[in-house]
Amino acid sequence: MNDIATALVSVSDRRGLAEFAGGLVERGIEIIATGGTASFLRESSIDVREISEITGRVEFLGGLVKTLHPAVHAGILADRSDPRHLEELDEHGWKKIDMVVVNFYPVAGEGPVDDLGFMDIGGPSLARAAAKNLRSCVVVTDPSYYGRVLEEIRAGGGVSDGLRWELAGEAVALTSFYDCRIADVVRSGGRMSAFARHMTFGGGRLLELRYGENPHQEAGFYSALEGGFEVLKGELSYNNILDMDACVSQLSEFGDDAAVVVKHVCPCGVARAARPEEALRAAFECDPRSAFGGVIGLSSEFDEGCAAYLKGKFVECIVAPSFSDAALAKLRKKKKTRLVAGKPAPGPGVHVRSALGGLLAQTPDDVLLPGGLEFVAGDEPDAETVASLEFAWAVAKYVKSNSIVLARGLRTIGIGAGQHSRIDAAVVAARKARDHGHDTRGSVMASDGFFPFPDCIELAHENGVKAVIQPGGSIRDGEVIERAKELGLVMAFTSTRHFRH
Image (tube, rainbow, N blue to C red; front, side):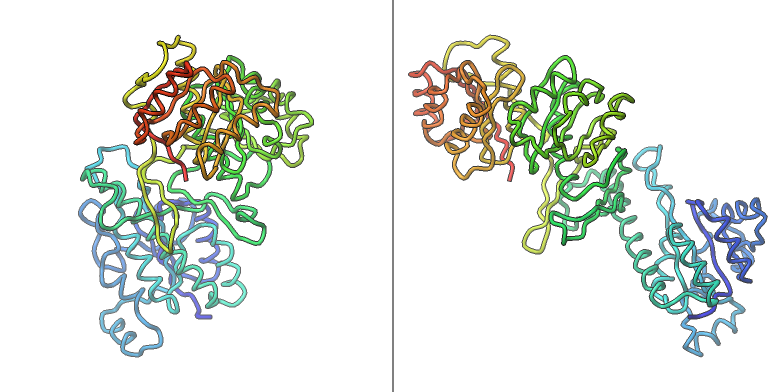
């Protein structure tokens, strides 16, 4: 461990700073700070030297230039094991800086996009310089490390090599994340394509997860955004987060009258109703067998009636904008059910997933019926049938391909998901509906992709389906349309497909 004699402090996030700096001073460590940080520390009765005493000049250009000076960066970068570095410092009368405590300006600003005044230059430069010379200079960029650093200094006067490497890694990751956020803002101001030659992705850890898809896998939840939700009960897993995302994405298609039950990142029941309990009941009872151990999403407050309905039912997780006190009192008795309050974003910007050792990126599927409906078979349907078709189409958008959705009114009664052939998906949807006592007569059918053959239309007719919605675009569209006409089915084309791999 190298002894720490001098620490440079320049932070925007001042949580725990007074206690940390006070602990350093108690160990005889000299504190050097930039203007705002120095004022904060003095108000906390901590001895501090201004950075201008080191650089020999005051901060200038309205504070834009504070630490960008050879006296500062030479003090950080000097290799203590190289006599020539130490001689050069002595020749110029510059001090060694043994620790840098720094974090950056917040990225989010209230001004126009083309105002880049929030972009921090000095902070990332300090962090990167200290990380580069980690054996000689300790870098601390996160208040959560203050306790560990003080503990080691109090124990031995310095900071161990292991912690130095950990802190340097955190600093480099932070500068990388910060640059990603800045790049997003600059690109938006310049109207650059999201798919420029170089793509940047960054996120801070919001949650430590119990495990990944399986218990032997580690996992964490990272985001460039502040959570948007609060975990009220339980610890979330990787799979919980994925299922919550499926819930929130599905609910984003509707107003505040919807409920969804998700299992393995796929809706197994969706409904809209005037009261939350009615919507939840209809969504759950679409396929109660699959709903066992599922994740529930509501677009309105989860009230006592909803909680009462779930009595005796095993639910993995519930996400809703809020929970009534009465509902919470009941739900806290369900030991294994996790509760999440808030409205997390359904994933703005570019959607990314890993593949073949790289990243696949695409814009979100944020359209539903951009061109409206084109009715190609059957009589003009009434408004209720059109509403049911549009509802089923909105559900099919979030069901794994190949997908078929059967709906009656504004509730699903059978969902066939993730099948290798579309007819198999239709068979599964019809079988599930029958297994759970739903009458398919008078229902509507939605398909996320076109029908390559008339077989799905024929199966729909056998099950009493009255109307079908699908993208169209098959080379056999004419044959499928003629068959629908022969069977007396209403059929609508959307001209937009919603594959979900």
